[in-house]
Length: 180
Ligand SMILES: *[C@@H]1O[C@H](CO)[C@@H](O)[C@H](O)[C@H]1NC(C)=O
Ligand SMILES: *[C@@H]1O[C@H](CO)[C@@H](O)[C@H](O)[C@H]1NC(C)=O
Ligand SMILES: *[C@@H]1O[C@H](CO)[C@@H](O)[C@H](O)[C@H]1NC(C)=O
Image (tube, rainbow, N blue to C red):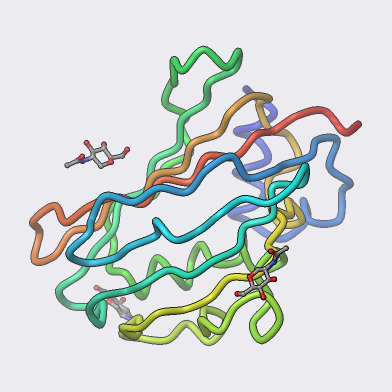
């Protein structure tokens, strides 16, 4: 855990950690959302042993920087019994455009624009434009992730607020295991 925190710190300071090879691999387990008025991620399937994500997601409104804010939290279930413990790796409440800009790099290597999606996240669009977008054959890559990660089921939750009222959550669960 100490090393994990250390590397999170390094990541905040620079990109040094991207140069060090990872000793773990990651794969998608699930993506769920429950903010059905604002977004819908229920049309994504996971294919094959690699659990490639394929399907569409929808933003039902323009998510503008003034009305919408997000809080991020992470949890780990080390043994797979469904008991998640919170990790210190969190994102304080911030406007959606700021959050996209700050955290997109974790997903950028996995979801290249024009190949894996038509959602232009790499341009940090603001507002996040309403629409239905595809994601195609997306395998979770950990290139920009911390060098040291706990093993197990990692749950990342983004809680969305509209005018400071809770509007729903997006939950991504991935499995982190030793390189096989
Ligand atoms: C993934 O979805 C696309 C359509 O978005 C489809 O063309 C493709 O065949 C799907 N891939 C697999 C492996 O089913
Ligand atoms: C979004 O809002 C934050 C402050 O709430 C500001 O720092 C940031 O520059 C804004 N981003 C855009 C693209 O307007
Ligand atoms: C939506 O999902 C989040 C994250 O899993 C959970 O904390 C929240 O209670 C859920 N809200 C509703 C209304 O189901």
